[in-house]
Amino acid sequence: MSSAFAARARSLRLPRLGRRSAIGLSLSLAMLAGGFALAWKLDQRESRPLTLDGVPLPASDPEPAARALAAQWHATELTLDAGSQIVRASRREAGGRIDVERAVAEARLARGLGPLPSRVVALLTDAPRDLEWSIVASREDTRSFVEELRRRTTVDPEPRRRDGSGGRPGTSMDLVGAVDAVRGAIGDGRLYVRLPVRALEAPTERARDLRTARFTEVVAAHETRYAHLGGEGRARNIELSARFLDGATIAPGEQLSFNQVVGERTFERGFAPAIELARGGRRTEGIGGGVCQVAATLHAAAFFAGFELLEHHPHTRNSTYIPAGLDTAVSWPNKDLVIENPHPFHVRVHATAYRGLLRIELMGPERAPRVEWNTRVLQRFRRPTEREVDLNLPLGTEEVVDEGEDGSLLERTRTVYWADGAVTQTDRLRYPVVSRLVTVGPSEVRAVRGAPGGEAGDGAASDGAASDGAAAREGAP
Image 1 (spheres, rainbow, N blue to C red):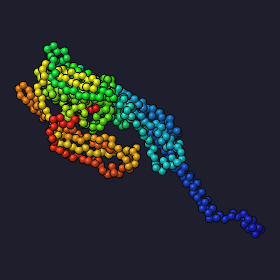
Image 2 (image 1 turned 90 degrees about the horizontal axis):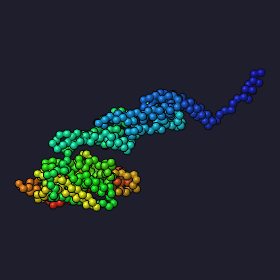
Image 3 (image 1 turned 45 degrees about the horizontal axis):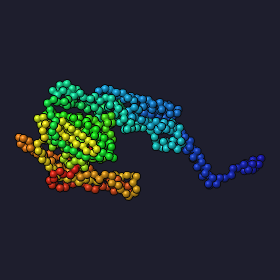
Image 4 (image 1 turned 30 degrees about the horizontal axis):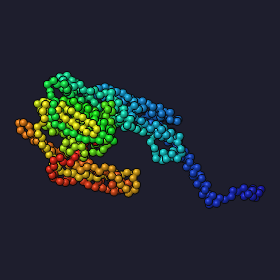
């Protein structure tokens, strides 16, 4: 009986596994165990609390809750202190946006609703469970919003009477500063923003219809030329500024502010886009390009009329329309040209701009005394070269974007031969360096990074030779 049982047992014995089969079975069992462990780890991680912008999301599909939070974020109102009034606007109206689709995708992945490889990567990298909004504050949208806000909140000053009584100051918003303040509040989550507002002093009422004043003689005049064909925006700005300036009257001892007379350069007032000089001397398009030529022509006429030049800013680039020493730069509201009438009679500005000729005459009852002037270059400053990488250029190539300008220190001397004696005044005018700008292809990256500051320094050159007119300097085109 026992021998029969043993024989039957031998017939039921499983076959022995080969070495390769054993290894394969072990690997399969290990992978199966690893899969169970990975699934358990994923389930543990994805069941943990999940927040978006500090708000807990439900354990189910988080997409509806995320979209509701996004709508609430866009509708949240900012309180804007614009000086003359308090304005409220939603973040969306002020140019703020959040990337809703990205936030939804991240929340769904964190809840285990994404592709398995992405879930595993999130597990291995320990992706955060506290999600944040990806905020985008468009500068263009915010600028449009602030421009409209400034238009609504600007308070124009009322002029004082000539005896100093009456009048009322005004306010105007700093456009660039206000755009930065609103974008910063959107990014930081602040809901109250104090916008930069500057006060505008009440000007003195101009005397235009003076019964006793006579304007029969040209006290002094100056003229410059401009391109009236092919440069419609610039020509329009020059001709419009001349019309604003024409007829302004300056009483004895009183001042004329170019910015106050011509006013802010905006679309609404008729000014057009044209090339002008930005900070650093780079050419760019802006509203009112060309207005500086009108200011420079007025400055030259006042210079030869013996006027006091109370505020005057040299340009940053060479000009073709006026010599160095007579040019001036203006911008609203930071840079101004302010002149003072030293004569014992009223002076009226007569400005015309037609078919490429700009002429400004200062009219009064008699001509100005004789004026002599000269300029001398005291020091020159060589322009450096700046290099920037442009990935769009072919490998190993470079392109000159801007040749730049050398800087200089100029000495200007004017002698006015008044009836009671000659008066000589000497000023020093600094024309800044504008660096040469070169873009290089990608293969030049190391060379550019290894040589910061470009090829040349600011080295001073000559002690200057005297000249009657000096080299021409350009105002804002």
